[in-house]
Length: 91
Image 1 (cartoon, one colour):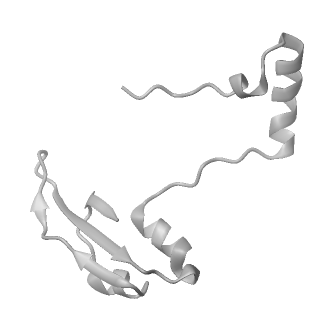
Image 2 (tube, helix red, strand yellow):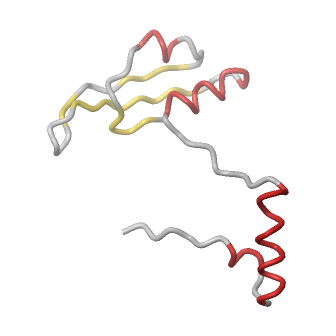
């Protein structure tokens, strides 16, 4: 489901498979054209493409080389490792 996204091209969404619903195109508070999209029953083979089309970014996963310095630092300071990753504040 996409809320207030860019106006959609029906054929691209329909190619994913499943049941498609497109909302009307209207302007948001800033005057930009937006549209709602809902698609259900997407086959699993098209899941990655659907996630891409929704504009969702993948969560960053650190590899072992990036984790090692953080583990050493957290062990020497006595803090647990989860505190080594600062959280961003959303205002």
